[in-house]
Image (cartoon, rainbow, N blue to C red; front, side, top):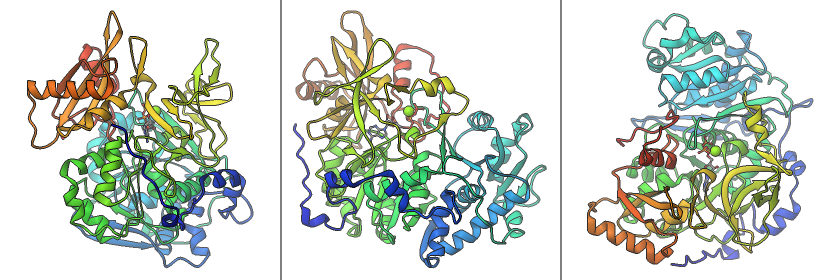
Length: 585
Ligand code: ATP
Ligand code: MG
């Protein structure tokens, strides 16, 4: 099936931040983008200042910055001034203990207001912030805090007792532990965060950080192997700000909901920094995904821009478009998605359920910000990630024998997605992995490790992760196209596709499929799906085998772990599973 291009009538999007893509690209420079920010009085650049303080200085302190919705629907609101005061409190807590520029501050917290205060307070103090996903067990926490040489940890008393106390003494760098939700006297060697902050309510002068000073340490999702620690600098805020404006169409006063957990890069770059720097109001929901709750939140909070992920969209699809239509979502101006390829089926479903398509965009922990995107005022080609952000040069390259790469100019040819370095939020290294970092660059390109194609209009099409791509009888097959074809069948909720070694053709395609509610696995359904895929894809690309699964293994950030499907299929070691989501869900 050919997916229809979704046209954006010019009149409809006249108020978009990026109305004319070509002109936007022509006019863009990173210096101009930097000029949209303040910088520190007297020189320097600090993310916390750009996100919060500059709005207060400009007289917008009473605007809404954050609405926190508790699991039990309790609400806490913060204006920019209130958030700023709390941030000062935490920055003072750090400074009074001698925690300073470059020191690593980790958080292990659920989606609670303290997390936002700790992240920005750390940056304001010139220290380096690293968020840990709260569902991690003791081992992944210890491994990341060891790599990151953590000096400070902020966590809840319950997490501390279960996940940190057992090994705390083994990490000599860890000096200060602050606890939230303390039930009484804090355990030995820790402090109650609220008590510590109560003593520290004074103003705080932002530590003078230079644009190239370290600010953030983010670990990758571990989809392809052991997670890497990517480091980012304060200059990244230039990318966060401008990509939020252009790709997410953020404007002052927007109500913005980023559903990514702040334990991952998306939840910090776009769940905290970008929307605040654009003077938006954040919505933060402490609770886990639940179909009706999410729609209710979109309706009640009058969310205008919603940034979510394919896994969530697929779960909403599973529940049906009728539920979406029961809610008044008329305030929604833009829906965007990131983290995994967004199947064309999902883009079209968005148009059916919300009256507007879902805008896919692409980036990775290493790039620190959105690199390729569908834009509000640009036609959407379902299944495409869109076009490079102004200021970002992307290409498709092939690796040559001598370690160099060459750009492939022919449209719709599969190759590695590469970017010309030079945007501010690019990682400055993998912590303690110099060699690995160096290998990401060749012939003036940053090599992303993903395969993609570019069409003759400059739209990019995701093919698959380098490691997931299947080579069968001379064809390079991306799991994404096979998964998308399977998803078009009404019985299929989710699909994960791998290559299984086979002596004559190299690899054959095998699919693992989770069914929608109301469908049961059976031999006849298996045959029907095989037939459907063969009709859609042709015999060379269609799966030779399909297996049903209740759930597919995913990372905690919601990505299908094809390498694990493959290891299990072949009886090979499962590798690093620290980011594997529990599979019962
Ligand atoms: P690791 O590098 O540890 O294996 P990871 O690559 O999943 O983990 P992230 O940096 O969180 O860690 O994810 C970035 C990757 O996610 C991209 O390189 C790409 O493979 C995938 N991705 C993100 N957005 C999209 C998208 N819109 N379409 C297709 N793939 C995407
Ligand atoms: Mg990666």
